[in-house]
Amino acid sequence: MKVLIVGSGGREHAIAWKVAQSPKVEKIYCAPGNGGIAEYAECVPIGAMEFERLAEFAKDKEIDLTVIGMDDPLVGGIVDVFEREGLRVFGPRKNAAILEGSKAFSKDLMKKYNIPTAAYETFDSPKKALAYIETAKMPIVLKADGLALGKGVLICNTLEEAQAGVKTLMMDKQFGSAGDHIVIEEFMTGREVSVLSFVDGKTIKIMTSAQDHKRAKDGDQGLNTGGMGTFSPSPFYTEEVDKFCREHIYQATVDAMREEGREFKGIIFFGLMLTTDGPKVLEYNARFGDPETQVVLPRMKNDIVEVFEACIDGTLDQVELEFEDNAAVCVVLASDGYPESYKKGYLVYGLEKFKTMEGYYVFHAGTKRNEEGRIVTNGGRVLGVTATGKDLKEARANAYEAAGWIGFENKYMRHDIGKAIDEA
Picture 1: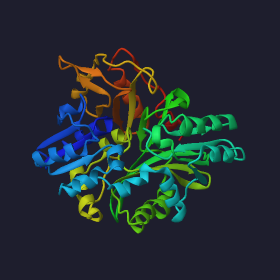
Picture 2 (picture 1 turned 30 degrees about the horizontal axis):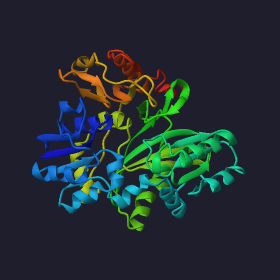
Picture 3 (picture 1 turned 180 degrees about the vertical axis):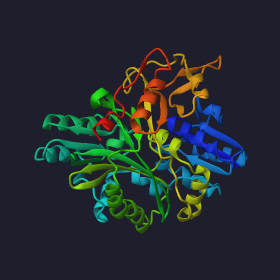
Picture 4 (picture 1 turned 135 degrees about the horizontal axis):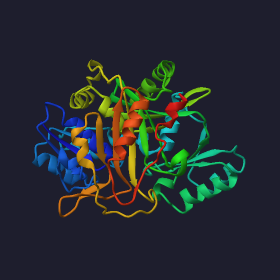
């Protein structure tokens, strides 16, 4: 079969790598792809938001399955466009992708169906938001309602920070229309855990847990990013936590969406906070996480194409997900200055070593091939270096060893990815 993957980051590289392992697949295309994805797929210069062009390409090339990696096209309704054209596509329709597309929608859904989450209020007026925080308990969390590249969440420790946050989101429009509405919620403390799942509209199958590092600098300092590294499994995601989430969060979310007439088929990413009052939902995403995918898929035993098809066909109840009894750690190599300003176009060295080392992977996020065909930096997050090990400590040591194999001029990384492992 022929598969088209839509997207251009490390997540899509990991998906392409996993899809390429399926004996069912003879040809992979990726639009628009990147320098690393080109190893597994033919990269096509069509943007992820060019729905009609993508659908036309899929028809012309007789694509059997399209996999949508990114949030923007899902929230924008790419699945609806493909389905109208009679094309087979993996991902939620627009009316279901709102689970990620609107923080206010997802919070209201959780409130209505008694799914544990932080107390909150929503605002579409800066004046009302500012009046509310005058009486609110600090710290407090401000969230842009719409998509903001994983950066539209502000944790404010003081009233002054909260006031500045409202200005940033709603008045200065730092994240554009994503800040037209905001959610203000109570600040929760505890361990954060990410849990990915496959959903076919009624059945949900949970993947292995992971834990992301969002802040740019060591010690969880600096600005929020799209993710500077991750590890899997999370030692804090215990059997007790899993049991609670299965009873009160996972299936409840799938059932709630179906009850609302928004049947969800695809990936639900649960961002959880393990509080003293039990697990609560921080956020939902409607697709694979980035960089969580880079540690989850290397541990997955299943043929991912078979799982994608089961989700589309409503037969997920017949699939048993299996994961290796090991661990994985991903360290993101970024351009110094990310997530604000940084230079691009530097040659990347050391990638060839990964071709000969089992259990070591390098997933390209922001790269391209220059005129000589060599890999150069082309983004803030450049590469995700993933390594496996018998346990998290070994995987972490391996990942940092592998991160040292790679060089480019303004290479930057955190040095404490997975350090929480030591505290488990």
